[in-house]
Each structure stands twice: as C-alpha cells, then as structure tokens.
Image (cartoon, rainbow, N blue to C red; front, side, top):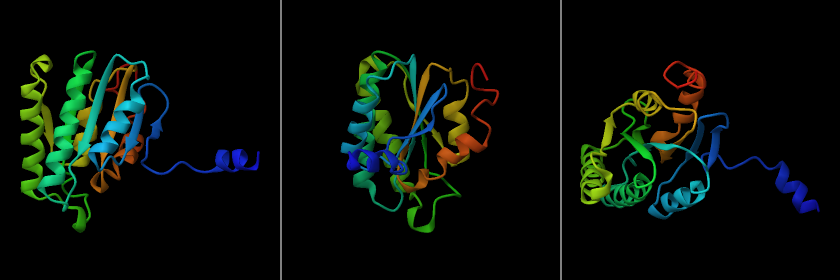
Length: 184
C-alpha cells in the first residue's frame, strides 16, 4: 500500500511519454533517442483512437550519422505501417538556433536523416507521396506539425535534446487553442 501511494505521488519522468496536452488534440512528448525507444512509443500509442497521426522528429545532434540513420530507418518503418491505416504527417527539424552547442546537428547528420527517411518511405509503396517536411527551426517545426491539425489527431514530439523546448512551444505559442488547430 505504501508503494502504491509513493508511486502515485511521483512526478512522471520528463519527456518520456509525457502528455503535454491532454485536451484534443492529444500531444505526447518523448526523447526517443534510440530505435528501440521509437518502437516502444509507437507500441504505446497503438490503442489510442484517432483519425490521424502527426510526428515532429528532431535529429540527434553531435551524435553521428550512424545513429541518425538507424533512427530514421526505424521511424520510416513505423510511419509507413501507420500510413496504411491513417493519415500521417512527418516534420523533421534540426532545431537550428535553439540546440545547445553540444547538441547542434551537423549537415551530415541532417542530410542522413532526411535522405534515409525519404528513401525508406519511397520503398514502402503504400505510403504514396508521404515525405518528411524539413524545417530548420524548432519553432517553425512546431508550427508546421500543428498547422491544420484536427482535434481527433494525435501529435507526437519525438527526438533527443534538440527537442527539449518543443512542448513549451506547443503550450506557450497558444497552440492549445490557436487558430490553425481545427476547432480552436
């Protein structure tokens, strides 16, 4: 009983399947810095009823091309699977101007993610013309992923340190009920 009470009082771990906005549209934030984490996020959202999925993905800065290619491949596979059943919008950012010096994305990392995601999505014939929407700045990426979002869609904010400010941008930019969100 003591353990149950203690767990109930614990604050959730920041940016680990953190519900940023529990009103509609639902917005969830996760660090997702490893392919297995991406898979876990997509498995966790599977039961959530929705008409569409919007994903904002932040490239991992200063971690190398290899991890970014692995993340991009996994992300494309997961999005490709979802695109069979629902509309999907993918925005990719490298958080230009807001990432800390040790988290800045190199041009090689950025290009690896964009190239890998688009190539993987292209191989999945069922996705039609689904492509990553590149957006250099975090603020621009938040605007892009939320532009025209409907109340019955799910929004995921995914990525490591360069995405740390995305949830705050969603909330403080009045996106909670700003025009541009359907029904807002």
